[in-house]
Length: 163
Ligand SMILES: Nc1c(NC[C@H](O)[C@H](O)[C@H](O)CO)[nH]c(=O)[nH]c1=O
Ligand SMILES: CC(=O)[C@@H](O)COP(=O)(O)O
Image (cartoon, rainbow, N blue to C red; front, side, top):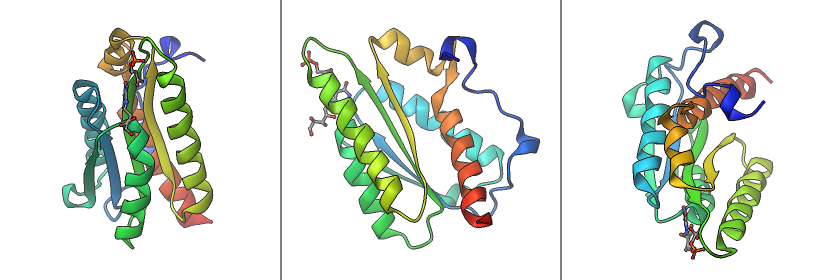
């Protein structure tokens, strides 16, 4: 189902765990910060709405999406009690192939982190053709992918604690 057919901000709180003792890291890229701050706001709101305490939401900024991998790795190494990390970025196609390589690098890097780390790393990186698409997915007509990532984080923390 394409995003156009699903609002990214919709969730049923009754199906989610209470996050009162969860600790979540969020690494945010500074490229396209209007979008990434919008994604962060969506994620932060959903986490708090589901009981995560403000002091248990740790935000670090990195220069660009390519640095999200190192930032997440460093955050996982720095906090022994983290339950999940959400990486937030916005990559927008330009004139060259740089878009493809940044997207591929961060995607593979986050996938590798999920294979190596003991906690889930959630992928909230927009890879869009233009700013209009990014704005639509960071609190616009299609909702907020940050909210979607926060909901996924809550579910993965519950799964990780259960098994
Ligand atoms: N063009 C975008 C970038 N490019 C920067 C890279 O992510 C990286 O910071 C640089 O190559 C140095 O290692 N980053 C984004 O997040 N979004 C873009 O649209
Ligand atoms: C994803 C990028 O790095 C890209 O936005 C940079 O733009 P350009 O390909 O025109 O240099």
